[in-house]
Amino acid sequence: MARGFAHIERTLAGLLVPRFFNGDASRVGTQTPPDLDDKVPFCLLNKTAGDRTQIDDNPFVDLDVFHHLDTEAWRIANEISDFLLTKPFPLDVVACPESPRELPWREDSSLRRYGATYSMSLRRIRL
Image 1: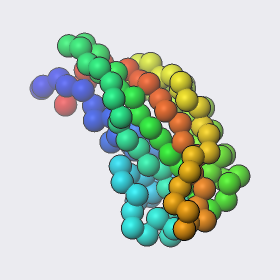
Image 2 (image 1 turned 90 degrees about the vertical axis):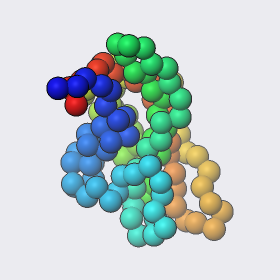
Image 3 (image 1 turned 45 degrees about the horizontal axis):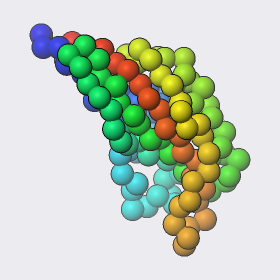
Image 4 (image 1 turned 60 degrees about the vertical axis):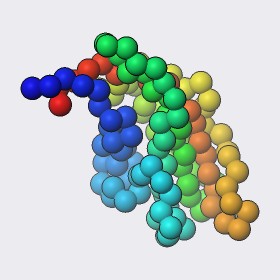
């Protein structure tokens, strides 16, 4: 069996969907859905940078949580942060250099957005 690196956005979605979104995979993605107002809470995942060696993949990932209520967006973003910092498998190292904070979103929207940036490290796994 081949060995490779896990797809980081899919890996994170697989960790977050059952724990924070009641198994509803439509609430986590790499693009905001056109009906975002009807899909909250929603978690946007995007790998933004990172280096790779033959042994490690070290992605930086932006993770944004959207909700109509400021308190709920903040709560979910912080609970996700606490969870990721426990380094669930297959994550070997997780750091949060930019912790959850409110970020601007569209002026024509009542949604609140809280985002954090994570640096992670993963080793090769069997694919």
